Image (cartoon, rainbow, N blue to C red; front, side):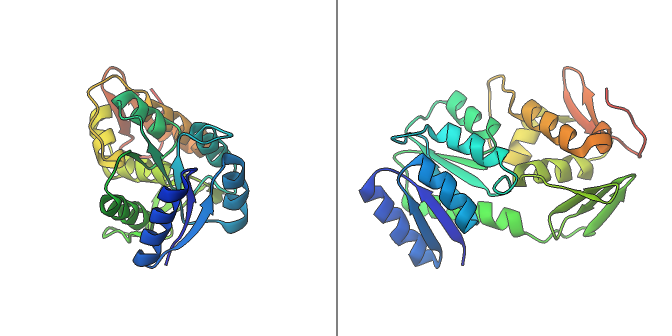
Length: 232
């Protein structure tokens, strides 16, 4: 059973989502305003946040940014709900750190399936070796924990997925479009800074180990083949 914080100001839709989550066996926690969502996220520590973009007090984008800034809530996956369907709006959601982006009107059944995928992604046990040591960097895939020089680094689920994806393709260039597909599960034909933004944050959090993520100018990113490589 997962605890899901549903942030939606439309009462009817709130009830439909809460009912559907209970049918899944989950525990819905309801919030109608952004301020309440921030408080409940800290108090209840949900496994996932369903976040509407249009709220009466705070834009959902601001709520998302606040949750991802706070170390206590940064690791909680966020699925954004919005009536905005343009690709640039979806890209903005991903750049803010959201794990998925669902456009209204949507199929509740499909939404429940997508919630399941996001939750599974955070708990999946990899088929490769669980703990990987790469210079000062240690990645425990099964526990979803990352250490640099034995100090734990707290990554969001997307940052962790990005790190594992890049490390798993060491010394092979991954284009931005390939990373968008592998990590975010989206195809974007527009110029987007989604990948660049997440790589920048990941490098900053990894400190010294961030230099292993090399920039291949005009193409994408590559994880160093061996420890000791410098950032391009």
